[in-house]
Length: 306
Image 1: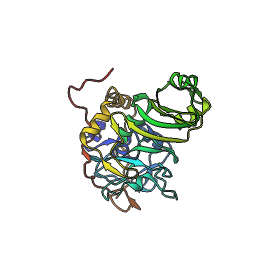
Image 2 (image 1 turned 30 degrees about the vertical axis):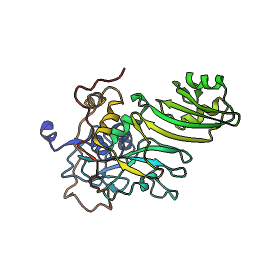
Image 3 (image 1 turned 135 degrees about the vertical axis):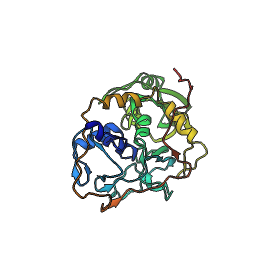
Image 4 (image 1 turned 120 degrees about the horizontal axis):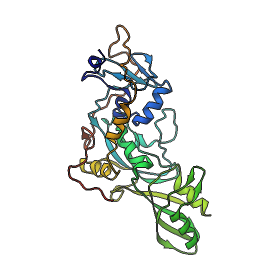
């Protein structure tokens, strides 16, 4: 009977949330445990729950999820200073997601964050798995920043940044630092990190005695901000999405699926008479121009850099 209920129409609830851009699978599990996910009007807290998206209604924080997960969206934005990376509807400051004006974007969110004062390359997507692969430190996707600090930075301070400094979460793994310009009044450096702790670059330089005056992210993996004016956006091409995923190291999809297989699998209960409709708000959205249908795929035979 369990096999019958696990027919082709059923998918894991956390995967359905990730495919609809709510969060990564791991973060979706936390939302499920926290009682933030409803199926047919009932709160679901059981990990491993399976649902039938064609028959059941899923809501997160009052928003009904019904966008086609096969039509995932990927954007690059040149974020200006003063713009925040949040989906909070009550936010009064300018939001990065609102700068992407594609009417068919659906529900998107930022991949990682740039703080309000920082600017530069920002990725936005509806694909939770993609966001996890790019943003999480364990995948080691390098992020490059142009950093300006006051005064002539010392060689000793640069060496400490390269070797790693101690923050509240522990010691950083170090950074690649190139000195672009150094004068008596200011120093400009190109800094590449692979961890991405909260406000890591600013905190690292503060730890060695320098307050960052300006911070611009110029590159994520192979993708650069060059040619995109501040405040502008565009959809990523299939090749760009594949290149970013390839840069995120060994494919984690199979290992994450294997981990999920150890969870209890129970189809979500169906409320009598439940049908698809009647939800308060909809997260409906079509595919943007340049969106990648079917999600990112690694090109066959591509060699990983060691």
